[in-house]
Image 1 (tube, rainbow, N blue to C red):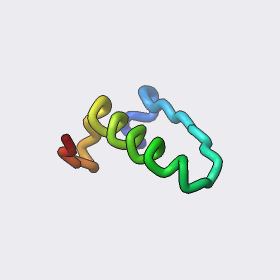
Image 2 (cartoon, rainbow, N blue to C red; image 1 turned 90 degrees about the horizontal axis):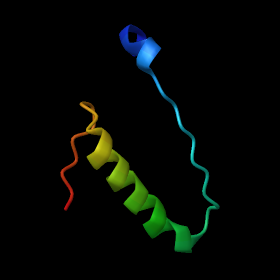
Image 3 (cartoon, helix red, strand yellow; image 1 turned 90 degrees about the vertical axis):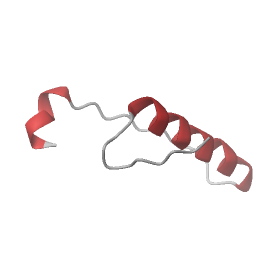
Length: 46
């Protein structure tokens, strides 16, 4: 992270903690992993 600090972008997304938001949060996480392809998190979902 230190070697890439000039390219680092942090985004915070807040959700209200409710049962109805759980599927939205999981879908967003999957979408972000698929788009960003982080080397430390290689989940290959759907």
